[in-house]
View 1 (cartoon, rainbow, N blue to C red):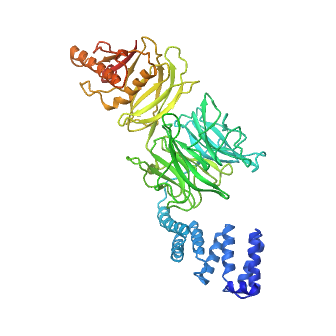
View 2 (spheres, rainbow, N blue to C red):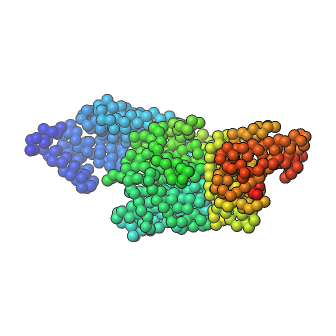
View 3 (cartoon, rainbow, N blue to C red):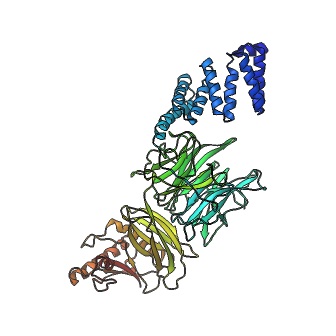
Length: 632
């Protein structure tokens, strides 16, 4: 047996072999000092004994002593360049994280010249790409001045996965807190902070209704802060805690806030959740598009982590998740995803795109055809040779938040903010913040508030007003015209249009929405019905509003209405009367064409006889040109 072993080694010295084997056993038992001593002695017995030199390199690599690891890898490879091809890969990885890019690139290439194992070859090729990228990027640093968010947010425990509302007034994050009840001695909980009158973050507190004795973390808020989707994981006994039922090792749950408290969370269920690991959700500003990370649970962690997207259907259920394309997902790990409120800019972490090693933060922009553009590294020193994740970019696109354990913090991971440089910013976003009430009683109304892009007719964003307060918030990507509507059962819907081409997120719109009940004599002006100039031909931008009127009639089969056409005073009274009548009838014909009984709809033209504003200004004339619905 000994003779067979001796023939397998690069030495015949029995003492050297015995010391080498002893060193390997001690490494296995994590007796690091003894292993180091025996392996060094084995190497000293024979200057050509390769095996203890490779073992020493591995030992120092495991202990984080990069300089020693590189020294022993180089010594072993000089003695036996083809003995252990993987050593080139290990050496190159260490050299790369120590910014020895030229040597690392040479050793990645040396590995590729020696071995054909597909997975490791992919890793080596990525390493070469990383070297080329990092050498350029470090010479072109991006502006970066992170600011610790202070003791009201951070603590001696770890804080990470930040999320803010569109008005930058509420911050949600995950905190790792000690817990003697947990088999791990700690657990993750949600904490929330709000801005005070001076714009400072208040002391963070657990989120009532969501934070429990079980593990919760990695959450996403809807832009208005009224919905939270978060991750809950099964404990060692398979229990998700607080009566929650799960499908896999970790699932996504949703909770709705009414007033100042979140309700009982519900599992999102299939097809979003599966027997796999689902986590790190990000909800789009439309309230209907959900991005998240799915991976496979294995003995030593999670593998095959990729970013998926699912969209809410009209019946409130989510569609089968689709894996994002190769411009974003790679054969390596993707995580920590955020879709910005502009709906077109995706931020995420990955170790599979050219970068600085480990997890770097990237962005990708949605193209006009709906495809995703290339992953763009946010650059040095935002990204480093370590792992970077948990990036969150605020609605204004100027301020970003992230987690870091850099020196000078409160302890462990802390949350920081910094000014994001212009090239990495998303599209500007504004928002409308308002309140929906009953026009007669002043009571809060829970209404469906929707914004449609007038150019495309597609839903841009939506939210429900709080049933306790009537408050709502919806985002507005700048550079578009929008039709806003607010609707609730038993009421006429509210209609308004917005041009936000020149608006900025520093100048949000405020809106007081008063809904008129479906009672005889109540009226509402349809502000998103458009005609060709001096014509009664309806423009396609009117369809979204017209279809809402159709749905109102369908949902209330006993409802009878009058459609009143109104004009400004430009032109003759006779022409204006005729045009108003034609326009009112054009809307009536649309309803009839959609199946509404003609007996339920009356159309009358009032011309310029019932102005609601002065005709002396263009703004006033625009208000007077309208179509009104009156309940009969």
